[in-house]
Amino acid sequence: MAAETIPYERTRRLRLPFSGWHLVLIPATIVLIFPFVWMLITSVETPAEALHFPPILLPRRLDFGNYPATLHAAPFTQFFLNSGAVAVSTVVFNLVLCSAAGYAFARFRFLGGGLMFALIMTTLMVPFQVTMIPQYIITKWLGVNLLAGVGINQIGALILPNAATAFGIFFLRQFFRTLPIEYEEAARVDGASRLKVLWRIVLPLSGPALSTLAALTFLDSWNAFLWPLIAINQTSKMTLPLGLATFQGAHSTEWTLLMAGNVMALIPMLVIFFAAQRYFVRSVAATGISGM
Amino acid sequence: MRVAEQLTAWGFITPGVAVILLFGVVPIVWSAVMSLQRNNLFSPNTPFVGLANYRQMLHDPVVAQAIEHTIVYTALFVPGTMLVGLFLAVAMNRKIRFINVYRTAAYATMAISTISEALVFMWLFDPSYGIVNYLFSKVGIAQQPFLNSTSQALYIIVIMTIWGWTGFAVVIYLAALQGIPKTLTEAAAIDGAGRLTTFRRITLPLLSPASLFLVVWLTINALQLFDEVWLSTQGGPLNSTTVLVYYLYQEAFGGSNFNFGYASAIAYFLFLIIIVVTAIQFRVGRRLVYYRS
Image 1 (tube, helix red, strand yellow):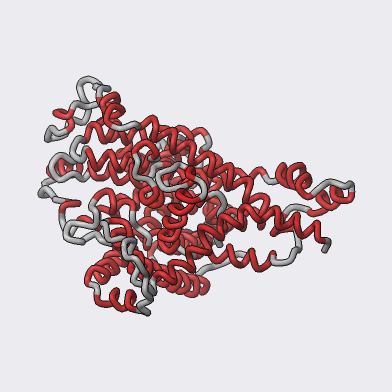
Image 2 (image 1 turned 180 degrees about the vertical axis):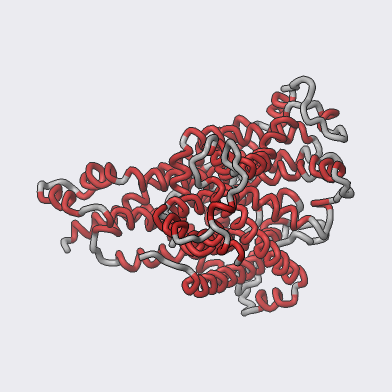
């Protein structure tokens, strides 16, 4: 290769007053955020402006009328509340159920423990499409025969099937095993119950693992589409992605309304994401590190 | 171990395990059984038909198309996302001004849902009023039908999903890059290696575990492509974007046929593909990946 023979210094003939990487990163950033910007611009245009060709890059005045019009056409506030309720409850359930089970699998030796662990781990590899049809039938049956709140067309149908995951149990079990067992043994000798040890000693040491599981569960739950599409067809019970998709179906060419709806669907998650960016980024990076 | 201890242990695991058994393990077995039955929601009984559903798949022209589209999509999406992610992560792995602005712009794509992503790209690529066609006209390219075209629609879906996964790939590669000790690249530079050689001989091998993870993870997700297709093309035009999961969904829930038996067979076929592809990737990957010990 020619590059190997050229001395290092001579490859940098051109001296810029700033890092040359800006010349790469500025266009890349424009491409990355352009869809967000264009969505925002279209949402404050009149339909005539939006459908003008050539496109109007900067509307002369901001027309916020699309937002009330969109809210009038579809209950985005309700979608937001549903998404929030589903995501928050799913996170809480996962933290509680996966901590308890993960701790037992990490520290207890009990009859059937190995079998149960192996059994639930089989679900890790299986794609959702394999389980979704029976899940639909089970959910329907539960709603009719056992508990209306978790049946088809109920918010609970989006929470219960995801209230605990094999990934969550496995992930926390692995983390708990890295903690020094001495504290737990000392507490046991002093007469603390298993539950107290988990609550007072193990969980306070598990902040990073718990926040990672919470962030990943929250993202998954908030953005889920296929299962809500199957389980919910009543508008008042829809989450943001499903509500937005349904809204698109009813207003397929009204781009100003669609983009206003899209902005409203996006803002809550963007705000949450930026507020806790450090946690989200660290959590996603952790999947790459623990994944191998 | 004492009985009380046993009961405590079972008390700890029962709620979580019950959820996973009911909504995970039982459905795995159940859908395997369903794939051997003629099963739609309205037929009074569900007779066993052996492998008839699987045989039907072999002769179903739409399944053949769906497999082809799934392969084409995966073959473009996975390397595309990795190249974009690697390039941006390398560019962003330095302490320069505004670096947090650049990084945040990439991360932001992680927050957007597949539906929001598809919706905004449908507008960008709108054949009549979209800004992409306007930019094309500026540089003298003819107006394109994009999602309305049998020969272009799948590629537009590739583009929108690469954009949507950019943040994820950047995060993974950036974390891996930051794990590479500076001393290694500096030592190479002192030994006279150019930047490109250092990148090829030092950085890329040290990134290979992250690359293997991305190949596997992105492939599993690509094989399950659904949301964007459902929203933007409904598998069309003329089935040109029908992928396996979309077809499976159509059979099970799309119309009024609730063809659960056939859909379950397709789901198990997809499962088989994922297992085989993942196994091959790990096998080949293990040989190519360089692990620092």
